[in-house]
Structure formats: structure tokens, C-alpha cells
Image (cartoon, rainbow, N blue to C red; front, side, top):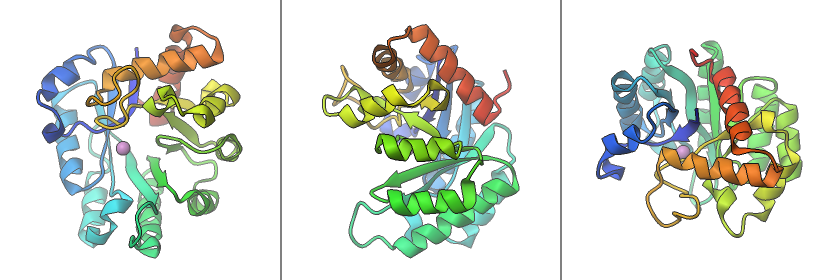
Length: 251
Ligand code: NI
């Protein structure tokens, strides 16, 4: 069994979303929220499909539309069936003009909410690793947390895993210029790694350029197996168990 621990299955990204979901029969997907529309859509998806779970949250890119009503909505739905975490939340300093202080404030507010209800925190961090690390050290040291789509250095990976943070590994690992991430996967124990696609984005080789789908975690698993010189079955077994344990999935 495979678990795509982080994907987006919003209907307007796919011509035939039912087919994409059917492709994952016998496997599990965790759909990640990013804004109110995707949060609502995720709650519908988990009701329709037994093998889909959800996280809900407000992404730093929508910080400017976040308000107390969003936080109330998240709190009202955090204990809905199959909601296993808060995410993706975090910091994104990629573009000029983003309000960094506002991003930090809503990141911390949502962390506090997750902790109040004992839900996993799923972090998005882009070009903001120093501030992200500071917040993790202050609020999430030892708390069930995932650094989604990890793309940092081995040194940072060591700091994170020492605090118990899990690293989501996606299709970027299969790219030709992924030497830094290859080193991370080689050096970090498999017990800290999770498979994810971040579908519809970041499609792994050999499908780069096409729309990504959860089934493609198989190609990420194959690459991890190659790097660690172990079988794909072992990669799937360990990463699946990591995800079941972290998200407390009923198996
Ligand atoms: Ni994502």
C-alpha cells in the first residue's frame, strides 16, 4: 500500500478527477487545504471516498484574505471525520510584497489551533527557512509535524528531524538537478520520510511537464529505493507505516 501524504485534488485541475482517484484504489491520499474553497472541497472528498483523508488550513499565499471567520471555520471542522491535520500552513517569502509579519501571525494562530485539538501540523515553507525553523523551535519541538515538499539542506534536515519533524519527499527528487535532495534522502533515516506528490504540481520524471497525480508517488518511492539501495517494497512499507503512525490513520 502507498500513501500520498500531500496532494491537492481540486476538480478544476483535472479533466477526470474520478479516474485519478480510482487509480489509487487500495492506496491512501491525504488532500491538503490551501484556502477556503479547497478546504470545503476536501471535506466533500473525504465523505465520498473511503481512502481519502484531509488536512485543512490557510496557506501563507492567502494571508491577505485570512480573517477570524476562517479561523472559526477551521475550528468548527477540525474534528470532522477524517480531518487529520492542519495544513498547509507556513511561510512563503518567494514574492516581494508578501506581508511576512502577517504570515507569521496566521501561521502561529493555526499552529495553536492544531495543538489545541492534537492534530498534525503540515508546513509549507518557501524561501523562509530561518523564520520557519524559529517558529518550529518555539512551538513545534517534539510535536507531530511535517515539512511538506522538503527541499532544504542535509544540515537543516538534521535539525528538523532531531525535533521530530517528518520530511515530505516528492517528485523533485527525480529531477536532474536534485543533488541536494538526493543527499538528504541518502543521509536521513527512512523513519523520518513520507511520500507525497503535491499533485497537480511537481510531477516526477518520467512524466515531468504533465499534470501530477497521487499514483506517481510510486516513482518517488522507486527513486528513494535506488538512492538507499533497498527494495521499493521496503520503502513503501516503512513510509506507509510512518504516515499511519503520524496521522493516526485507522488501519
Ligand atoms: Ni501543497
